[in-house]
Image (cartoon, rainbow, N blue to C red; front, side):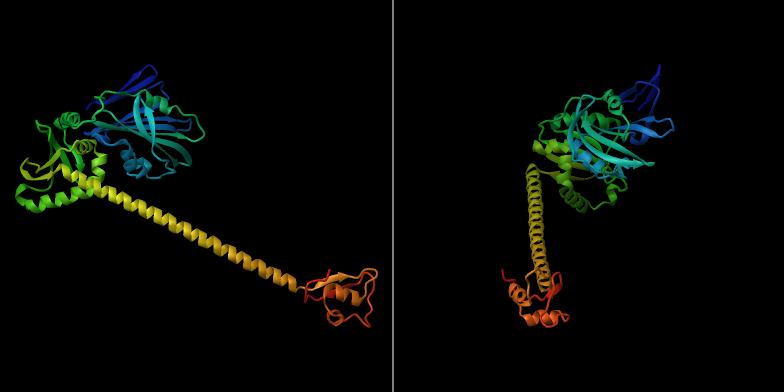
Length: 382
């Protein structure tokens, strides 16, 4: 794969086998990254401030292999498998978007680096039998041009939407003719074929580190079968070739070979087994939904119980406060015309109760303006 960085006046252009991208002036830095060879291409776009700190950037990845954009974002970005996202936070939900003329899925997030906070967006979309991942970031509080730069990207691959198994197979065959495609667990897709009657999709999978002679074939195939059923719910959604095969109910034939091309064994997945996977997945989703609802109901009940307990506690506190307040003596200021007898009748206590609370009162004599203590025994008499 050849990649070229060309300067045209004050503009720069990066060209590789899959796409081209240009910048408007020399304030931008463009570079190729070999990290994705031979399965795709990566280009970095950066603009710096006067102190050499990053103002904004973009990273454009193209991977040969058609993956569901929404799930790709969930796995790589939200799942933080991508190195750029390891320290990211505040992820949004995945939302529909458009970039460079392609319908895409996007997710927003934030990242802090070198004491700066960056507003970031990751977009994923399909172009033929490939998947683009575009990550953009600009410094919070500064204007951004990066989306305009990325929007100028020109895709050089086949951009025909691939919905059917036959189209997926034709596109995959072109890729496999150039190099093996990784499909997990160090295994590679080294061949793909749709039978003439279109009923059977064959995937030739190269398994490294073993030879035909070293394998117990029945045990090997059973292990692969068990693994397939564990991974099927996600794989049949994430890998668009497998998704098309399941949707069209193709017989799926895995032909496992060692690195010398010797056949190890064959795994067959029958169309009705897709239905088993779908049923099990539906049951799993139903269980998770039931568990979620049960958890919400338990949390609601716990909240209501806590609120009721808090109300009861507040009521008890209020009653105790009222009891304490009611038990406090009253300080009464003697008015013109008052006598101990009149005051005692007003507050429903005896003259002796008042005299006991006020040892300074002698011979039942009180004076105007004198403050006396009235013990609380009963409610005042109106």
